[in-house]
Image (cartoon, rainbow over all chains, first blue to last red):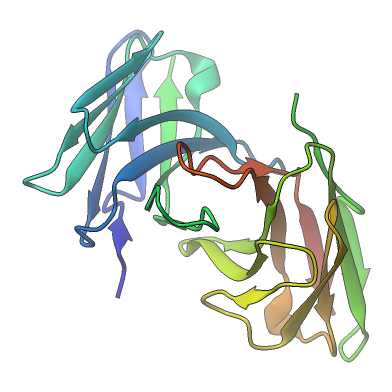
Length: 114
Length: 114
């Protein structure tokens, strides 16, 4: 049973427009959420995170929104740039866990079109 | 800057061979993780360790074992490689404690078993 779901395997967005990547989770114990970006043949790199006490976190062009009642989060990229073409993974965990184990979604491949 | 290194970027092994994948981190992190990434399946946790000589099974431990003799090093062992273990293997580390579940990833090892 998938605890973190990214239902869109891929997404194409025009350069300069907004990219919105979505993620749903089922475990109400999750209280920390992360987004990672991955280029081919490289390891994932951390992008942005949010804890459950917030509903929004912003870092430059990247904003993550959290809707706890819907168990849904989204990553907004504005404006989208060619270098944003990558696979984006949503992940969730529990801050009180000693081992920092997080559960990843299957990823969404973002294509930025020229 | 956190650095997680993996011993090989690309590896080709024969069915039945014993395979060692090494991971080293230089940030004195307590937690270390091994994942595999396959198309359409995202990142799946194989094993993790929250302390030296400690190991915990992840979601897909079958066919794998691990070793953590030193804090900075976490090894993944394929006792008898099989073709279904052809994959991208990713190592990650994180600092224990409340506040963040952020994991730092190595560049990955693309393993092909023929």
